[in-house]
Length: 396
Image (tube, rainbow, N blue to C red; front, top):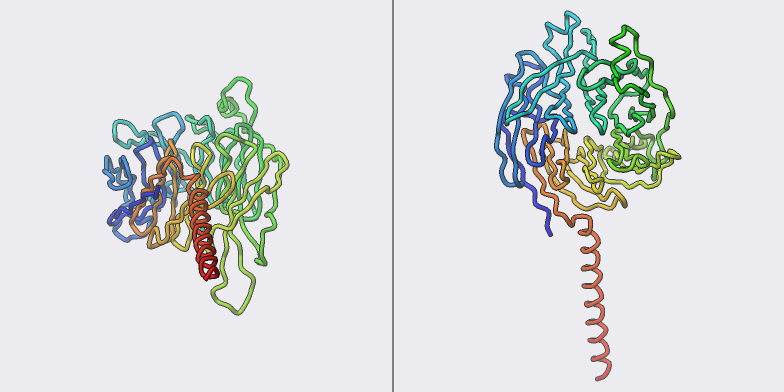
């Protein structure tokens, strides 16, 4: 079965973030940012039954001067999303940046709920909340800028641990297992133990006026050796398998060796890790250009990526075999990519004012094998036909 996918134009709405709030409804975050382009920053709620049509259900315009929503995460149980949105410049100058924002998504409407500040910016900073991730049970929320990450209790938004600050490398992703938090920086993976809390209230320490302790650092994982002669590599994404905490996936973007060739590929790889030994068990190159976004399907069977060569691809989570490759999915590199909760739909967005909807067929994992079987059968038929012809000719 051929995978169906359709691009949808969203005039004057560059897309930077996305999240599904149901199998058919999703929120997009986008706009012109804090630059004075005249393009408004907004959150939009859409409905899509298939891939052919999308319906705008609600639009929430942000206050003048505020930044575009650069990251979004949907709570796994509550009808709420959390977004990373920097405050307007006037608020930033006063030291007030309500960058972490909660919105209710109920009855086809997006409504502001509460905010908190985790990033303090000054005139020299150009930081933003690039990471927004919930734990599988929705109890914890990790939010991060370039060098600082906070783990918050949800829904109180009180910190459950001292903020994590990295002096080396930039933070690009984070992922929870039931017991740990993995933070992906450009140079390392950092594995932290989540706080043990017998009474079940992660915010007790904050309520009693006790500053929360730092998370225990369990492991620091270096960048793996990759095939080829690249000059180096960096972690771009990290995600636990949703049903097996012993499996972690990472995206590695490489730095090409210094040559006189201007078009040296900046290859990217998807890697599968065993989190008991922290050894890489499988790797596959997926592009000759940098991967810009990544996601794992809720059923744990598929991995999706967007590449700076404008491609959107899907691979098998077990074998890393390619299953789908959409060339020129957007005119600009994809900025966001998300599977829906039932793993039968994928959306990708870009600053080119488009979103692409992909309908994932139920048998996509077998597509690559069936295709190869058909090719082999066709080759065998052609070979037997050729041999039969040769034998017939030799008989005369």
